[in-house]
Length: 404
Ligand SMILES: *Cc1c(COP(=O)(O)O)cnc(C)c1O
Image 1 (spheres, rainbow, N blue to C red):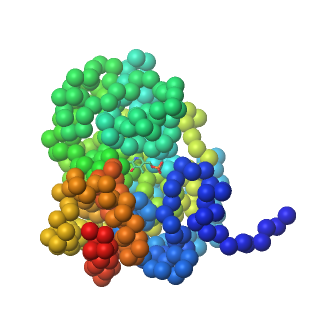
Image 2: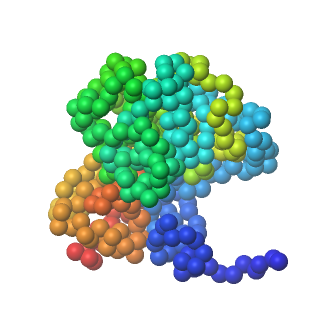
Image 3: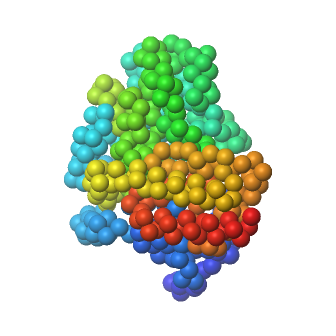
């Protein structure tokens, strides 16, 4: 039976899609640069970027060109073959990072799953089977597979899905003493986000990251940076770890990497690579030519002085505008983050207004995100124009004016 294309509305969601999400009232159907249009033709400025994903805005002409080109060559061959785009992309990642080897997957959670499995496999082979403890942080987020929600620091995401994997401990972010209290010779890895993203845009302190590196070296534990949200230009450097002067043993990236096409990667060193033999881990789609071609084009554009230094300028412009808004409404307690990952912390008395603020912003034609329960998050395109920043901020101002 061939179904006719019947019109769909937001209401259809409730009858068709499992309610793991509660999407907003409009359905976007078209995007260009930092603007989005819904079914009714209403236009929005996009400060959310698909949750830090559409790093070059929507339908970037160069990405469209590469997508079209590769779609006519070959889409998928599986990992019984390698392919040219994957090799080219891997080379670019290796040349511009601490790493010597790359593994491709399709989502952030899968890259982290691979990272945690590899860390355990490495320490089991190199040391002993008991060296399997993973230390992570309260409030952290690492994805939604059972292993990654268990490592993640919010039990809300893992409760009732048990039994959970064992050997995972949590310490307090930016409090090195809490790590020192639990690290020991059986610690396999310490994993952290350099800016806790879902946890509320909380940057790690430089001294904290340096001390974690020292602890890892002392206890022969691996240091894993989850740069799924911070990587590929988001903070104004290709990788956020470059701001810290600390190198990890394993690093994961996703979100920005494909500019909106699903792809993720795990990067690591030759030493860790040395224990791997074919067959111990894998994925059907990971590293497919279509995704890799688009990611390669995304990196080619982002990893330039022009775009990376632009991130800093755009960030400063946004923060300037936010401060101006705050002079009028006295609403924000703090503005924090790095580059174009910005968290706006609301004063206590406005916290229960956060969903009204987001809704009013949508109505005015500007898309914002939240992080945690009292933080408005912005993760726009890394190449958003000044005109779009100003227009979006004007709409945000009008939204606040209406409800406050
Ligand atoms: C988004 C995110 C993930 C999960 O990525 P998915 O693609 O949703 O699986 C993991 N870690 C961090 C830091 C993230 O921001």
